Image 1 (cartoon, one colour):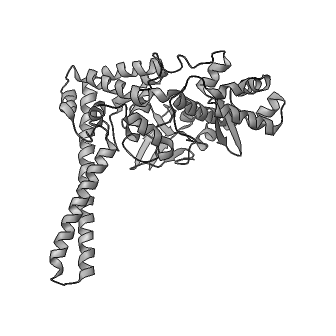
Image 2 (cartoon, helix red, strand yellow):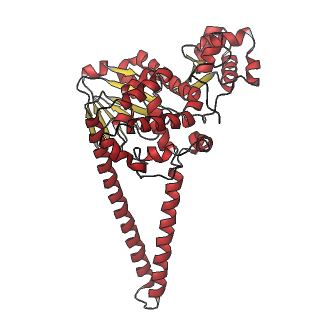
Image 3 (cartoon, rainbow, N blue to C red):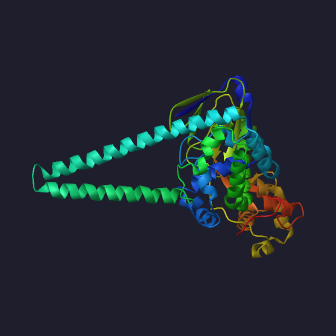
Length: 404
């Protein structure tokens, strides 16, 4: 359980991130690429992304374990400047991380990893003993069963070994799970001048393969979440905003509780809290391990469909021609429920719902449920079309999306 303690000043300092954070999405997507959970939201993305990955996954797996702690210096505050500026500013801030901080956080990573490995081995030994006791009880004291018992144990050992090997392969497309290729961790801790550059290059290459092609979709989901939280803030202040966060977060003033792998108390002490919705965050929120860093709570957005590489144009855009639908698109610009949409455009509730459905199918609108209503918001492509640009040029990458 994670407990975030607020003061009155902290409630006044609650704020929403301006958009998705490129480095948080990059690191959290590296968790998603190595597991099988969330097949509807991430299954197709995993299949497409794995075809574009190379050796960078082995390098990153040394710093980002399958679960648990990863160094805070991987997600600097400079990454929150937006995609184009944020990615490069974040990577440069990472490259400039003081050696002392790198050494301290890597030492914590090694400690946490050794603790996790010890717990895993202890659990494996316990499970093996339980299986052996169950077989002994089933067979009683029959001496003739000794040979079968040994054979069963050997078979179980081989099966467990193969299962663990397959899990490692599935988790890490680069087959480098938990290893330290080229001694990166040790070299980083020792202050190797080339190692930060190697890490930055690996992150940038992985980002271009796994995150950049899907950025319009990621940004649309985050923008839709921000619209929901913004409405809650306007309707009822910070209390209402914190009450509408996803179900794994529970506001019990003055404490925000969250499902978490272990018990943790975070006291804001008047610093406020930045809420960072994330496409690749799943099941549990994420906070910095170092309580001295500016408080950030990364939490998952609501998923209604899988991410897709953005296409330029498409046959559905032809359905958008017409005065009424243009008015509907403009009415959604700052977020709108279906009832508000009908009122603003002077059409019936059923007609407003139909127009919103067409815009959603065209990739121009995202719809999320908000209480008993639904809230429509524009995607980056919808916003570009509304401003007179029919294509998504320059929306999320300096050189356009990576598609191969």
